[in-house]
Amino acid sequence: MEARENQAPRVGEILDQGAYTAFKGRLLDLSQRRGYFDARYLTHRVVVNEALTQADMALTLDSGMRYRFGPLTLHQDILDDAFLRRYAGIEAGAPFDADQLTRASQRLAASGYFADARVRQRREAIEDGAVPIDIALEPRKRMAYDFRAGFGTDTGARLRADVERRWVNRQGHVWNAGLQLAQRKQTLETRYGIPMHDPMTERVDLFAKLQREENDSLLSTNARAGAQYTRDYRGWKATVFNEFLFDRSQVVGEDQALSARFLLFGARASRREANDPIFPTRGWRLFAEVKGAQEALLSSTSLIQASVSAKALMSLGEGRLIGRADAGTTWARDFSLLPKTLRFFAGGDNSVRGYAFESLGPEDAQGKVIGGKHLLVVSAEYEYPLYQNWLGAAFIDGGNAFDTWNTGMKFGAGVGVRFKSPIGLVKIDLAWPLGENREFPRLHLGVGGDL
Image (cartoon, rainbow, N blue to C red; front, side, top):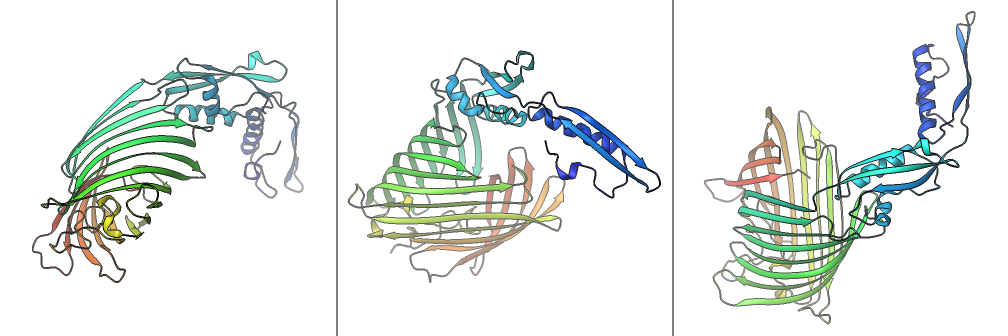
């Protein structure tokens, strides 16, 4: 057995009997946690040399044999035991490790199927060095329902209802569906999830979605269906996907519409790090996606599109400095055949504040914003404490959507207040578009997490 260096008394330190006793206890506890249940000290003495004002310590630990995991018994009746054993990650015959038992309990509790997972090692039933393990699992309710209401200047007033069947069968498949009704966007979607070999880190999803969305210039009605494979790897979430998209887009006030279809293949990756899940003072997130379609494969035209979104925040003085950037680019054989859902727009709560939602981008002959091939948006913001849960903010945003990279950027700046609520940060901003003659600022409202 080895103890961590910083736990052991070091040469030259002042003799502290309490620290010495605590070290012996930690070393014995570590032995027990690693499965050396019979560990005991053969020698443990301190010899003091008063003439040299020093003490010699001698510790001899007989670890004995290391015990192994024995049979694993799962006390539940809703899912297949073989499936849950993949969650637990405990193999009979492997060296005993109490930390692995803790991880098994946490993984099962985080699976979404159970409200509680209690692990017990049955040392009284040890046989041939194997420790039987019992895990008592308390199932959650099979059906879950969620209803929410909100308001944002990008979407207007909104209502959302979700239903989830936490386990469809004994293999742990999951089904959910959601309906959102908002002034600018209405969505009906469903998803069927299938856990794979390591159910904590990989799954396959089958999905379908109907959506109607509009800004002040374009109206889009679209349907999509497809499949995706997602895997978590060292903090990253990576996804490959395939979907069929049908979209009917038209300029508001006109009868003519563009109907387009695309069989899209793509991949995306994302990661989020934060020191607090709701109100972080330090952290970052990154999202990147690339997708494409080939005209010969059920698509209106060939295209490749890539986008990236990043945000970071850090403490600065008594407040927080927040930076944000979004960029995207599109190559298409015939860009005029791309519907609204495959074009870039700028402006709005999470883009260039001071401008209306999706009001920035290339325009048609009638001055309607129809979206562009490229996107670039950057933002800098400083938040500072005002009183208790209230914060003040000052910010500047810049960006645009365009067809050529030399198109000018639009800028907006303003001030706002933040309130730390139980559901996240409530944001109220007043923003002015710089370089334009507008007497009154634009109001932006939003609720949600920082990252």
